[in-house]
Image (cartoon, rainbow, N blue to C red; front, side, top):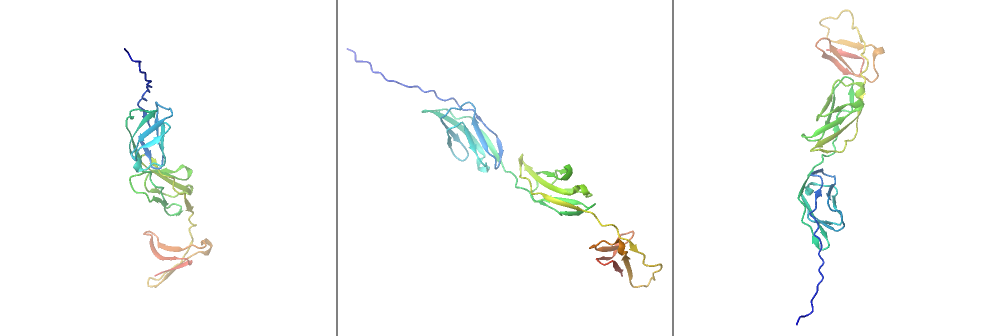
Length: 239
């Protein structure tokens, strides 16, 4: 004698294939890390191994905003459909590099024509420097020296700094003004004769050649030795 045959229904689900993970191997701090499973875009559950712990998404992308050093490390993902989970993907290592701080430009904002322009920054050494100035001027040194200062050097200067491919925000604009020197004054001849034992010699500038608000310094020609002044008076006493 045979019993009746017992029957059971078994549903076989296909195990999802191993995900292929794509994304950057390096990002700058403050940027986003965007990781994508390229061979699976079905709706389901994606389990992501990250340096800050496991994360779950229902799409094939993991987006980490405002990346920082804690996000440096290894990433992997598995896909679950129904009750079946795939193997974890190969590991993808992502490095987060620090973006340099916004630089600050320092320097004299008013320079006389023909003098030296010196612009400096508060940033530490070891960076790449990207200076820009008026009329297409540029430089890549930590300190920017321009000699002699020309009228065309007047204008706006800015700076960006870079390290490991990460570029800072642009500095605030630095306004540089180039001052035109006043016209050379005319010296009045002190007289035909000067006694050797004369205790003082007074040198004066022709009032017609004077510049309002200027200070005057008197020099001995040749060695350019200062002998009187500086003074805002039109005459200086040589002792």
